[in-house]
Image (tube, rainbow, N blue to C red; front, side):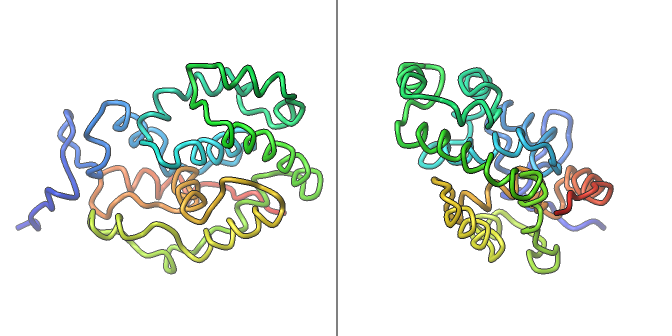
Length: 215
């Protein structure tokens, strides 16, 4: 007889498949959970987008960011950090008047600053991806999440703390340990789908096939 389902942690979607509890409140969450969250990424612009949006999310719901993501991409030149690094005060003013994004001066200016830092990092190491992926923790060290309560307790890990520290040492802003860990979850450096989520295996298979960039 199968074990009973932890209905607080896992819920069936419209298709009957069990998913992590957090993605059922809105269709946008479920789409993000099923098609993107946890799948490994090695493209520099996408990585820069993810870490910037995690910074913008601080203090807000992720749903707000998801629903504005296309606006962010338009406003920030599809997160091409070489182009963003050339933004001027005129661009800051443009962004502050853009109702389609989060109009937070500190986060906007941090994104422009971080773009310059990303350009410098690529010049030194060849790619943002190769530098970032060196912080990947082992699956044994991170551990398997089995419940909502375990997931809510895990807000960072030693590798995320180190990633945050090294980014800030290089002049990045809005990249604290919690933001760094959310970034690691989003871009596939860790697989935090719950043990019995039916999409955990999809992410695990993708991670097994993924060719990690190297320095």
